[in-house]
Length: 293
Image (cartoon, rainbow, N blue to C red; front, side, top):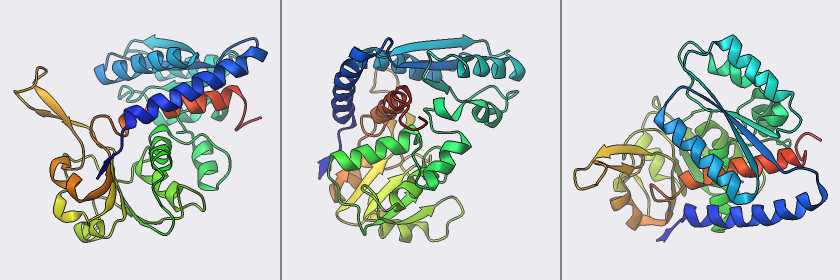
């Protein structure tokens, strides 16, 4: 069993990005610039945006954070997005989710300029990705592909089962792994809460992407010997032996599943570190106008 070290791969990619950015900006008047809009005081969102800021500094990018109270109106937030869309010094824009209930997230996302949509959530980028056109691929699926590629995991002709059909992970990664490319050329089955005989389907997987959002849903009896398991889930479970009073687990029961796998990602330290790294890659592409010349 090989443990897929997302932290290590993320650092390798950041090193490469730092070198590329330093070389590229020798001939430019500015550096790549990523802006994040943060609404309210959600602790997880604040942590993510803070880590994004650190990652930008690590590779030589400029990072701006636009913070607003939870009481901001939808109209006001749309005006903020307009302002950033029209700022030529900003290459990438993310609006941190979730947003307060009185704001329609989809409306905000669709208002972002697709050329600055480095989260890859805008319908234009999702459509371009599905049609195999140049696009910003959403960060978590992009990070998963990077892990498969960097560990040289064979995907062609493999049976891939994706658990979860979210627009952020499950649906896009199922499309990407079916494409005629590497990593790709898989035969993909997308499972969800209404899938019948889900355990039997999981057992057929050569590659399993678990993004179903259920604590330790996948157990050893569901996984065939030699499978590659990518665990996207992250959950806090009470643990009095830990200083914080909890531990992090995924959608896979790691302790019993790992022994059956050829490759597996841990939680934490697997897919998670790759998400911000993929965001940096997309921002550098935006800076170079690689997707939208």
